[in-house]
Image (cartoon, rainbow, N blue to C red; front, side):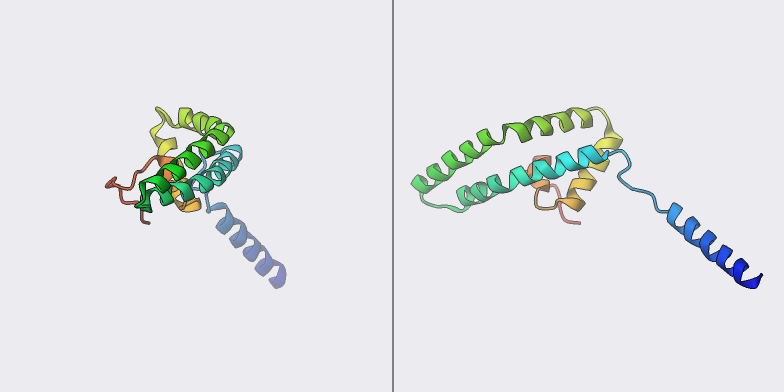
Length: 128
């Protein structure tokens, strides 16, 4: 009797503890999370060219990197369509937008500046 009572209390405590942990990104559906990951994987190659353009002093090499950057953007058309769908969903829904920004910042920190549209001179603090 004592063992079954202890077991019942342990199971109850486990279930109660697990049910208390909510997903803080409950508005972002799994399909949208997958789309965010795919978009971020598309942004990675462009970030390389963007950084090279920004850091290069030779104007001829900057032009080469800019051309490569533009070609990569053209290749990204399917990803940009997904990004457009997410952008439409965030428009007008402040609660969803806040969760979206927080999710991208936490789960995809390298993608965050490009996904949210933060430039190198913007004053928004993107650190955690």
